[in-house]
Length: 424
Image (cartoon, rainbow, N blue to C red; front, side, top):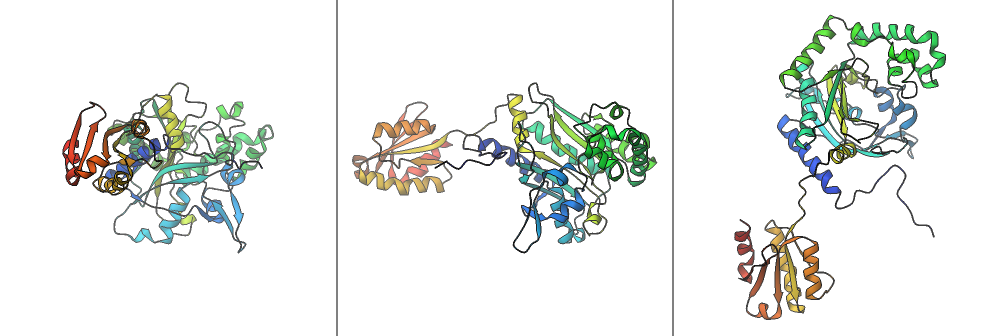
């Protein structure tokens, strides 16, 4: 009988590796607390219509990558392919726009699902950390959102980073740019892929994001959104750049940067790794402003901005820069026992150590004393506490430092207190 294997495009994150994830998640939560972003948890699946309305029916995500199914009530549901739409849906449904504290600043962390060709750093189930600030039109919050992402990467040790930004403009600017793009591509649209042909009238800006036709000569000469920004959009983009400069965050303006989702306008940005050997796909994080998304989902006007980053790609970037994370590999104490009564006693003693805040372990395989010491060594124990029948009779236990080899005899009934003194 063939063994059952993991589905393609997914991964098991095993002990020894998961600690890296936990460190990143812990740092992200800590930073969000400093920046005053609160956690939100949304369902892993949503009504398909949510993503059709928000992400856009011309996007690769909606057209090719969503895991969509019908439930027993014949409702169309989709495993979430990204986080923003669900957060904005929750913002509208739970009337967060009525909260006293505006803007509403939220973060999320969890699995997303996209049916795409698996490759290095890209999975069909992947974990995203993202933030959303909803309810403010202030360009300073655009800079804050970018600063949060950059701070997270830098505090985890990444140095070879590049931030690129662009403005997609307001509705008026985008309409003017849209007409220019249609006029530019229309005469030779037959030379482009089927997807680009379909996008020409629906969303021509998405043609600029095409991977298949990116080397076509018309791509290089396509009208730039920067040239079509009206006065308000230019002023907004200049303010974002000023604030990033004030925050000492280096950036490059890239007029060709087009985020892959329909809901973006004004500020768009990506953070990339420039580490040698990182791979062909260098993007670590992407985000931007999405004024109009709340209305699309049925709520009142509430401008927003956010970003999302992949934890998998974060770890790949750390590995590319050969950054060793400060993972705690030692346990505080391993209990070694000799004899049935001593073995029984260590059950309660182990719990006392753990409740006192220490990482502790004992033998569960009835191993000889030599094998128990080897197990303590493998666990990288700082101390080993040895309890035999003779020690039990006189209410004593021997405590040995694995670093120095120094051994101390301690009263059993005050062992945890003595252990605490030694660890100070």
